[in-house]
Length: 321
Length: 206
Image (cartoon, rainbow over all chains, first blue to last red):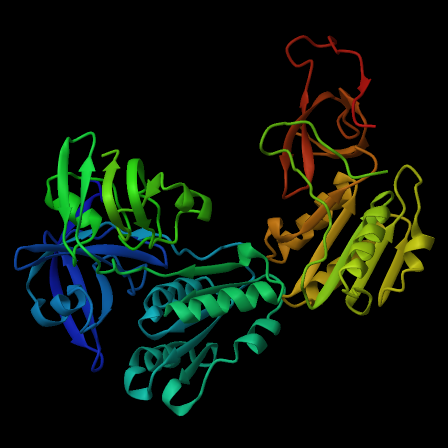
């Protein structure tokens, strides 16, 4: 088993354009066997061979967790990103074979909650589509508040509205129809858990407003995968392997290590899961910690790094790899 | 009497903190016996920080099993709602109603014996509130609520180890092993292998 967990050889069964920015991709195993079941909030890592560059991006599963014929994901095109979403949009066509990881869940529902308040922005809707299918099946109490830029980008919401009717509330930025977060958070019955997935600003706003309103920390859940940021090139020594690896500007530290033939552990590749946490043996310079895994104390100590999203500036960085 | 310091134990053994005022729309405070002192201190701390908890406070206070009653001093605080009752079981319907009617933003403060803290925390968990979101402070008796792992009967106010199960009569060793769901420590038969070989009862939880 490789470091990212077991894999599935899948065929792209369908590519459906949802709107100007979003496409939905359906994967089914090449050998026709059922896919492993998953729980709402799970993601898979999709491997892409982009003209020699190996890209591995995490995407939330949006299919019904009870559907074991295959998995569906949605990808929002980012014209200014590192290229993963553009590759999915421009090069992935039905019939293509791709490798995807087994599902991993970093954003599960808390089954102890009496009510689930789901708040999504933009493409952040995807994990909730699977959550809602799962919650609806067992008659759990849920409510979705989904904000998008405009009606023309709101098709996934329209579909959910058709399925779940008044449990779905839609908001449109360009019409200035926005979620009244303080009021929404104030009016929830005791035992509600809130889940938020969307742009960073939205996640921070919900987390802060809920905490200020007196919500306990354990009732606030969020998920945000970070794209590895672009930065200045740097080099890193791998103590156990005995090699020095050059990290290019548009490459993540993890990608550079993998390209050099080392297979370090990872799961989310977005700074959230903690699987790739690595000991720093020597550091002359500054680690740019971009993850949301390490504690402020761990960051300040410069003894830990998350190679999936973090970078380095300075003269010497030695990792225990 | 001040807040209790507990010796290190296994991880399931609950630990408690010190009550501090937290931002919230309503404040439900439940205490028994010496726990009333923790509520008096909580109001004093809030006053010192310029926070008036009174208009949004619902204080539910019951006398301790050992007789300690600080009800008059708590009544004088002037909380928006105040209940003074003879026992936790008498107060339970009121506590359940308060939890059932509440909205997120409610702060829950529990003070006094482990039984009071554990039982009310378990009710909060039943309505979906995270157990670690409840604020707790231990004061007063260390008496335990013990479940017999054999007959499942619960014996209240256990102060000795070993103890006799009030349901099935077995001699039980009182473990630090704790169930949050039923708010009870676990009691395990101490003379199962050598019937009749029961160590002397010692008052361990005064």
